[in-house]
Image (spheres, rainbow, N blue to C red):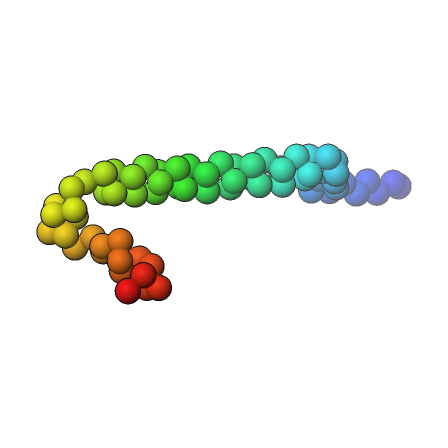
Length: 72
């Protein structure tokens, strides 16, 4: 009499290259997202700074003298 034992679970390991590729892609996507957020913030800041001083004061945007306290 012979007994045959089998397992349904996979015992394979992922190749090392795929984990490095995934880490590289994740880092690249993260860097691209940060760059996009920086670019968007820069655009918004330029739009606010291009407004007339009276309008910026009305919406509560700080004046140039408040941004650099050494100028007082």
